[in-house]
Image (cartoon, rainbow, N blue to C red; front, top):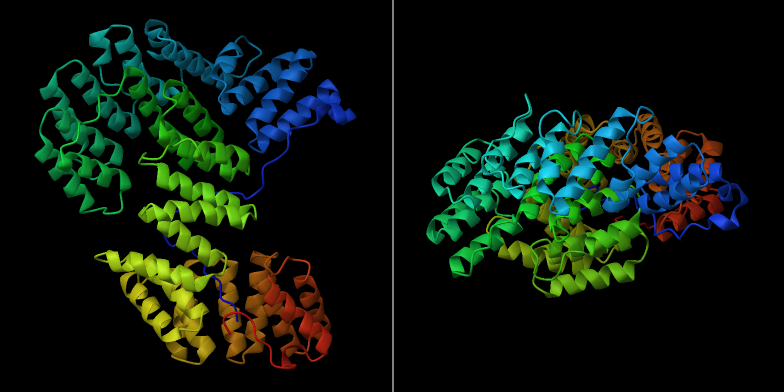
Length: 564
């Protein structure tokens, strides 16, 4: 039985979204339907909905030039240009007038204001951003930007007014952080420190705020205080790459980072609203804010990383790769960017390029690069080497993360070193006793070996209760019933699993076996034939073909598939 490692990454590497490969440039002239103005509009709509903003912008511009539905097309062209990062073009197309939607006009005002900031026209930007000129849902972004625009306009008093939007905790928190930074620019250091301390006094301490205060302390010549601050937060989150880098710099006495410029501060202010929109699944607004932030600060690596994640989730891997390629070697974000870049190639089926990138990152000694390499090796079923990489990471860690133990335990199990694998899985479960993936994997492994059956079934059932919509976990429970000889219950659960994940070849293969055992042989044959249409790996494919050919189903000659 081939058990799947449900955790897509045993590390901080997180895959977000689709896995489509890069798309070719549109050939509008070659398609008569697209060659018409309305066809171009429809093509633009499709591209925009699929996250291909640059392509959408071209189609809408072509449709607009032809006079197709001028007001509507102009609004779409504005949106596409903004999402593609062409802020100058978007500002020129910003919707106005009665025919434009209120939502588009508000976003248009924000875009024009940011362009003014980027051009050094702080007063123009401030006039657009202050007051109620830009309403919901962009009021928070406008409020956080307004003090930076005031500072650029030379309005010291206006720059030091803390932004407020009733009931908006994001504006309250990051507005005070921005105020602290602007107090420092004004050389009002005591007031700046009061704000920094207030921002960090609550339970929620953002990494951005911690690093901003630490850099302030470093600039004030208080390196020991900065190191103490970084240590206190690293004690709670030892995995933060940015905090580790800041602590190393301060402890080594290297020069403190310069204060952010006004444009850099304004760009940073947009990241929090972008994160909020991402969490709220308002991807277009999130991407719009990030594009605006990058207009102000093209070297803002955090923004590029977020853009890459959004483009990857939209299935535009070419745009995702472009974003992940922006952080340069030496940047705090570089290892993570290389990891995500490698995964875009892995998801597109280019395993060779993915491993090449991961090996290069790992060779630098980067922890994240080594984690990525271990994950990719596991994904490519190179379990022995993956276990070797993980062993080095586990040895270095004072308290190994349970996910590292889990991943190595799986690798050991896959290469037949079960006693070592079981030891790792049990240690991981001791550290994370409620983790459904661990409960599922270890519980099933015991059932498959006929060990600890009652405890193991309880574990698998607990995992399914925690994730009842996980087809993989329901499949584990169904296959557990199968292994225990309760074929009727196995059929019930495996049918449920297939409903949840209809395109999974392994689940369909299991259901065929269960059907055979309860005498539903025609349905079993149908399932095994279906498996062959679902791009199974070579072992599952061979197993299904053997059962079809033998006319004896799972009761035929001894079969061996991965993990069995």
